[in-house]
Amino acid sequence: MDAVLFDLDDTLLNYSEGADAVYARSLAEVAAPLSLDVPALVAELDAVRQWFWGDPIRHRRERTDMPGAWRKIYVEALCRQRVPAARAEALGAEMARRFTEARWEVVRPLPGAFNLLEALAARGVPLGMITNGDAAQQREKLRRFDLERHFRVIVIEGEFGRGKPDREVFAHALEVLGVEARQTWMVGDNLEFDIGGAQALGARGVWIDRHGKGPPAGAAVRPDRVVSSVAELDDWH
Image 1 (cartoon, rainbow, N blue to C red):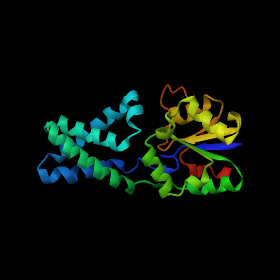
Image 2 (tube, rainbow, N blue to C red):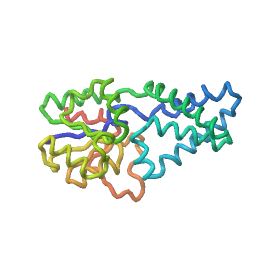
Image 3 (cartoon, rainbow, N blue to C red):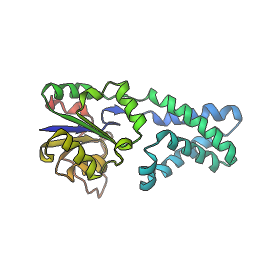
Image 4 (cartoon, helix red, strand yellow):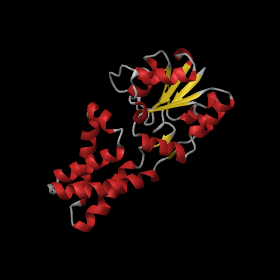
């Protein structure tokens, strides 16, 4: 291999596991003292989150301002439970603030991730990172876990102006690294964004199938390799 590109969230760092509990706790901390129906709000919150992120256009637009997106989700859940709009805005902002702070409790390195980065670097393999989302949030993750030092190029959607699976994102990373796609691997947990986006330029993809369910029925993207975590890439050490 000439180079390896990595996704960040749920590839190198745990991002999703534990988030549901933090969402619910942040809501309950604000709602319970006000005699609001917390179980009903939690159920509504789950429905709103699925609705909010289920729209591809909204997903692309809102993921570059995650604290703002979290506020909108809380406000929508409150409004659906007939909380007056002005009150919902104030409560939703406070819930989002608490969630933003508490979210860091579940963000942590995934097993084997940092060992793999160190091993590849020791072999002289150029590494790049391509991650969608909020520039401030992603930069903070890189800072907290001292990840920037591993990568010769870091492409963050909120900074670059485009995100995966757009060809320009991958092309830019390859150009900076000075490598060809055919000898480059992309490692990520999103079958369409990470693997499909990289394969469109001729790179190969390792899909992190965290839940072991395999590709969805009818999926057009076929990864070149499937693992449940980066820890399984021990043959790359």
